[in-house]
Image 1 (cartoon, one colour):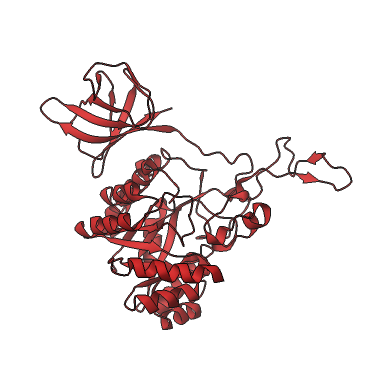
Image 2: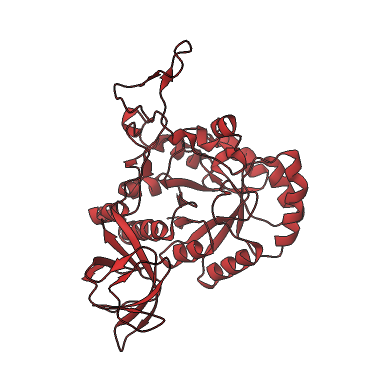
Length: 408
């Protein structure tokens, strides 16, 4: 069996480290420019150096997304950017634009190139073309079924790696190549500035009746006609691996570190369970329950089994389902006193029932009985301030980088 990679998003340096700590084999991240998530925190050059070194020290990989569709004015700045980062041992560059690919190769001749899903890779002849251009991995278009993926693998599987999205937000446009944002508010989705107008509420207006709004469905609130549910394939790990996909990709560079940790941890368990004993593998529903503890827009299997229909859209709301609040990050633990130093992310109160989880362990539930202000050492009843440092008495041993959450 080919080595299976769990690939996670890293919207900033903290999320990069979280993803790797919680079980990702590799991460993909953007620099401050030339990535399709300009609103993410992204990494400056010093942070890229630190992030790549952190990954390599764990025996893992780090990929830089440079997947914009470049315009003329992007060419010179991109070449200058490449000169600044060419000595950083980035494991691969994710590209969609042939010009960007050629620029990378001209500055970093030995760079490993992965073809972005933005390039709409849908057949094996296209894969062979990109292989001839020096691409070692293709990230499949999201619109492919398992049957189509297996055919591509049969034709090129020994020559190129295949990567595909298995979890995260779905875009209504073809493999994410959208003009809607640019048309409506002049924010170019193909250059990293998408405003997500596919999530907005729409109604019909007849031109001779301005101001009179007609719902597109029989619902006076209107309808979110382009609002897709989120992709979730955790129940289908065997089918994914048997199809020839070797890199299983999670979407979400705009998501929180809590989201990244929760999703990576669940898929890590599922993948490891399957690889340990494929013949006797059984799906554990607690993995899906964990995914529901991170924000989501309900789940769909996308195009993997059939073309999506009306059941794969959410016509009611564009809001996320959020069943849990992210409370804090554990920074230190004193085993002699059972006190954990926690960096608060949402208000915590004495008496709260919370869940504590970390990489490689099952979560446990406890009541907050004792809480101290980390600066003064005084007992407090509540920690309401953003990123307030507090000490919480733990019922069980914990470790640095564990996370706290509370059911709403």
